[in-house]
Length: 329
Image (cartoon, rainbow, N blue to C red; front, side, top):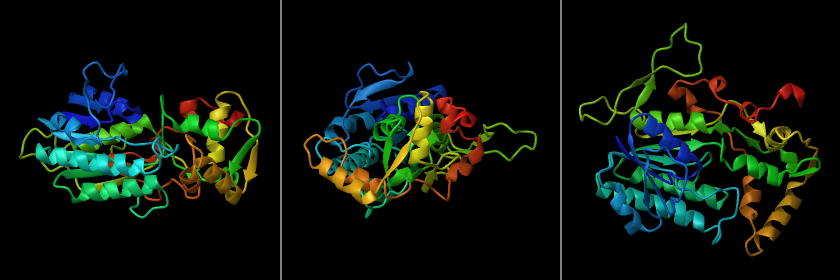
């Protein structure tokens, strides 16, 4: 399968393009500045900006599938202001859909986010929700993923947590009670690839107790007569194996560096005033949206990892990734 991955040189993109290449697909990573990013040697790169249609349209020629990963971080205020979320997430998605339709691309996988809502409380959440509407209205076979925060080598979640919650004396909005359900990048990209290929779990084997499910590929995109991809038209909420508060994430992140955490509760109202005031300053890294995002959890009660043959207990934990011994904390 010929697969174009927009945002293919980012954190998720680097891992997904490697996964797809190792599965035998012809993969192209589209990015504004591919540069010297460490990609799988068989992954090609092409320059393009999803907010500029003419710059990306040629890259869709001859593609069987597109995975749209282009995104701005919700953790920091974007350069150019919060309105950039609409420009990139909604406008960029519309451009990708237009190019996909123009070139007859069969399949479109959209990376969204837990809580995506066209009328949501932050610019990021609203833009993600409206982008989902654009995808579901388009003339493509679509699948939407809504993951919680993603961790792994090169992520920004762990580093952001260390920045927001320093060790030793750790003031946190609301005492750090905002909850997350972190998913390891290795688990997430395998599910993305399975959705793209139409893989489904095999019937459970009583003797198989390993973490990797047996799978059956029902549609590799090669023949028009293949069984339809069961993931088309589906939206998947994806979370990791455990729910952790921000304070617990900070404790794990600093424990990996042998540093303690002593949480001090900063009332949410006071934190809101501080972040909103900070956000009014030119070039400020955080602002009102970051405060509002801490007022709601980033978790799912209906985790769809089972669709791909996983139990939550099969997935990699943040503590395991960080090499932290929970008994020693």
